[in-house]
Length: 108
Image 1: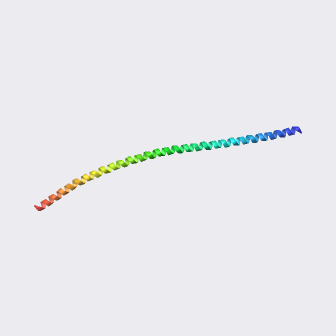
Image 2: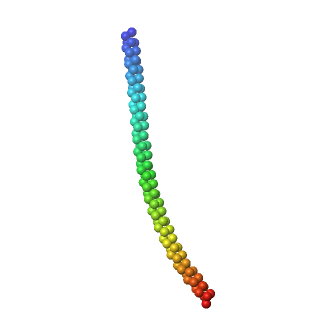
Image 3: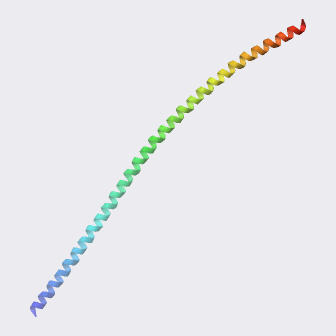
């Protein structure tokens, strides 16, 4: 019976070795999954940071353009108002002269 007992011992040892290999493989798989998850989280954070920087640059650029456009519109508006004031003053003088002439001509 000793050879049978040796075979049983060999089978038990083989099963134990198989279980150890399976456990090691599971542990390696879990480590790879954890590593992959950590890598993915780092990549997502990096991507998010990059997009946030791009957004801030775009926003700054757009805000700067809007400010420049606003200033240009304000200058144009002021210029047009000055032109209107000047034209109004000229016409008021012309109207005053015309009224004075009419008043003077009536009295004659």
